[in-house]
Image (cartoon, rainbow, N blue to C red; front, side):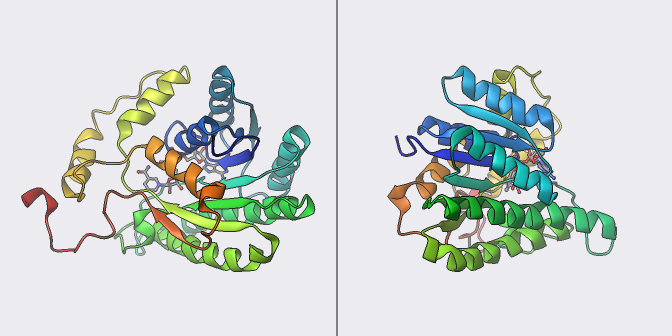
Length: 270
Ligand SMILES: NC(=O)c1ccc[n+]([C@@H]2O[C@H](COP(=O)([O-])OP(=O)(O)OC[C@H]3O[C@@H](n4cnc5c(N)ncnc54)[C@H](O)[C@@H]3O)[C@@H](O)[C@H]2O)c1
């Protein structure tokens, strides 16, 4: 067990990627603090983990509200004694372009992705330093943070910013023994999150409308299959564990080759 006796706080624990990462960390022995602005996403994730025998706590919290973030970190420490691992995963999607995105929408998206990661890193890292925990922080990026995606200006910009936030925080916190890395997912096979939602006691989502879009993604990715949240969960468990103790300020890409692809090459044609 890579994370036996460790405490991990994950933000944005929907049945998709946050839930998959929470389950991946719990499978390696971590106690989980499931944080989400939507109460059901925090409680359903924590309740499912508890049903498997793991320790888990649900906290409803808006990652952009500093008092709520400080209270969430305090609650995690009061319950489990400390935080060893923080995963900044919460997001709002809002596909709009530079010509059309209202200022208010831009500010909200940047706020959730960047300010949320800043506030949780600040308060969780302080809690680690106070308790002399040599902790690990993981920021969830996207292939859109490495490339220029049209009509997704707030998301692409914030995710790109999170890559250098990772490096800068890694350099500042290295003297405290705290590692800061990022993990890059890409378009994600939706079947696993549908299955996870059902395991959490929810109705099966109707995937028929999104299936053609994900088939298009699949046909363009070098490995010709899309990663699942559990692929990110296993990679996250590795990079936050002592197995990766010499890694800081780096990005772990679980993208089936998407970023490495030579742009004119068509993987489906070869
Ligand atoms: N889904 C994909 O294909 C994909 C691809 C690449 C990267 N990612 C990244 O993976 C991560 C998770 O994506 P997902 O698809 O699971 O998203 P999702 O929409 O399923 O989950 C996001 C969660 O964040 C929560 N949230 C939103 N605003 C919040 C706030 N202010 N405070 C606290 N919680 C808040 C939501 O309630 C939700 O539970 C994100 O960082 C995303 O950018 C996703």
